[in-house]
Length: 304
Image 1 (cartoon, one colour):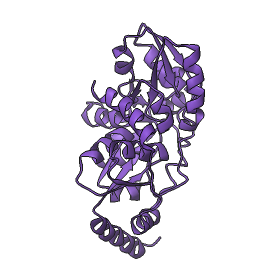
Image 2 (cartoon, one colour; image 1 turned 120 degrees about the vertical axis):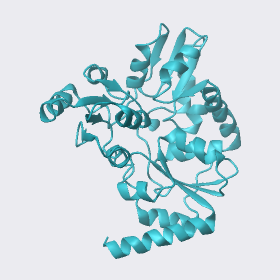
Image 3 (cartoon, helix red, strand yellow; image 1 turned 135 degrees about the vertical axis):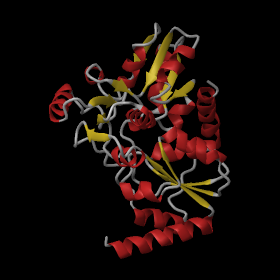
């Protein structure tokens, strides 16, 4: 797309956004031009929380399906749109509500913690949600000694490091973070000597063991911007580097792995944002009975 066409498309989006009384939200992994057009960029939960407080009629969620579902759960009175209808989260699809019900029947005394990266159906079957930044706090807040943790085995193992509770992890994983290996870390350290390694808790335990700091996407940005260190190797989806470089221009940030790309997060482009504002499609809705139970698990987490 040439600069003139790009500028015309942006103008059209801004005009439609005003006409629809809409807000555009973009996850930290979105392509740079989508991040730049957004009213707010962040991780999935902070975007959904922010949208619930905004006086808008329409939420355009530039991310994947479970994120738009979460926004619809917290903002049931608003129209929630997902520009890329086929943008899914493979990890969220690794467990179903039926599978979770079966697991609960086998461990009736266990509490169920679901990662925010789950479908509304799974959230509805859970006791409480968590994010990558508060998983440890959520687990330790529970009275039960046994905790079913779905769907991410790596985040479950990370939380298990900081609790005396028995964690029962589901065997799900993020296809982007789980592919990062210790060899990737060592190669990046050789390429960027002296740079601090910051990784996401969805990474494998052996990768976390080699890191200097572990944080969620938003936590990574805060850490880089406030740390006295100058150079960082960032162990998560490479889309975050655009935002970090904008907000922390004095820091040198490098990808831990150039192949850490979520294809689903890259399915949204400016044309799709424009089209969804035009048509108010695809719209994401959650049945009220599911939304009510899912909302309870989210609000219980927020109460912490």
